[in-house]
Length: 439
Length: 173
Image (cartoon, rainbow over all chains, first blue to last red; front, side, top):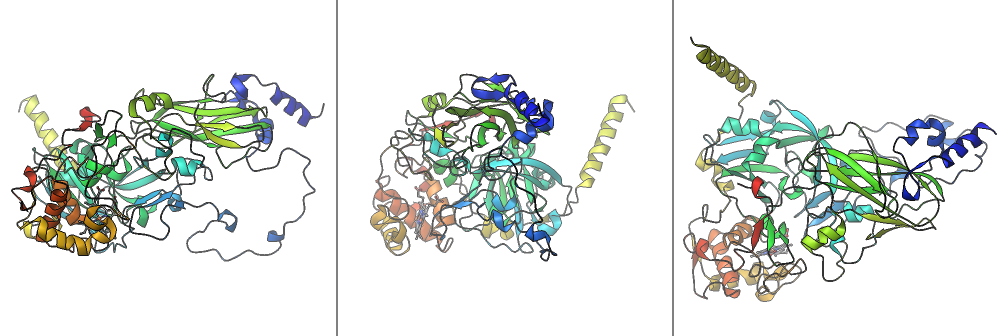
């Protein structure tokens, strides 16, 4: 038997770790190059004899001039955010991250999700000011130049809109990509000054229990945040993945509240007032409060709870014939580090533990991976994450029992409620099509 | 020096060193410096400016500056209705001012900071009070001739005031 056939035979006889072809998370490592070579991407053709290799046209002379700011390959033009309001009509704009077309644990700055309630302001950093006032000993104004001289920290953190995954409140599964369903979450390395440093300088009045943070955008979007969070890990973020924060993400500075509802992470931050009580601002008293089946509504949800979803495969990425695939996705929790992700290929009947990409950062994306030998039959893929605080994702049935679902099928862009973190399911049909299902 | 006072002295010294590391570059701001940015209105009325307005004045401003998006008489247009609406029942219910908003002060705060959408902060405080009075009176939450000002507005109790549950009480002061 030749070595290639032997490797393939070895793969076919690997013991399954869970139903429907899931392999042990370290199978790839154990069986090394042979298996790695046989794992098929979602867009490459199945194993066949390679064509004769020739010199490629693009290598027969020098290439183009290197640009000052890097651009993606022209072959990647379709990898874009989807816009809910491309003409900038007078209403909110959303841009969703194409999770099924990117990979790794950070979101490229150009792909970071955006919700902009009245467009992105064109802020001149030299004129921008941050005011800290209210229940402080001395109200202070900071320029960007001044902040640049403060001690800084860098940390990974996801930012997620409270309304991410809201289409899953529909009573029937809405057919859409992971981008349309879960695209309002992204992850970056943020660098800036801890808010506690600036609050110390202003001197906190012991009566202060909240901060009300406000943006320099047209509607001066404002949210109230408990002072305890402001003193814990809140940051005035100046850099996003090494470059200045993007205009849509809050240039030249934003409030970063790791693990907390995106809307509270005030962009274009210009003012922080310390108060004894919350402001009950428009976005906290109306928009980001969730009506429950008994007619009462949650207020001050704050936390983005533990969640995961599979990005590869996912709707829009068809399978190319039976064989080996890597299931991969992202997991994160506002409570801290991801402790464990389990993956199922049979709709939750049996599970195996996925490998977590190291290092696992607190309140940041953790990529998980699980090798899978698809036999070409129907399958339902699910992932379920646990965080270090011991919380895990509920099933959809559990979440709906507590929170309800919509009366009819809403548009995929609607936000009937928020804070949906239940297990999501993709079905794989024998023809390779991947669909959104409830299982 | 006792061990304890030595410890206190060393601790104070090291705290001073830590503080010294922060460059203290914030510029002191006086109340006059802050005034133009001091927009927050709290539910108890803290922050409400001088001035007053009634529904009759508000109706005129509404017609020219708001109706284009929120519809004639606040019944809704390209943007949300501001008048009418049932108590919320579940997540499919519309969250209206009359049926959902817990505090009347939020109305003043939000109109002043964010509306009209294309020219935020172009309204005078009198205009904001009258628009607030107009919307509250159209919703039958105040009388037609009630004036809204820093004293009266915080006293308007919204129907859904007690319709909320704090999600994580242990995180909320």
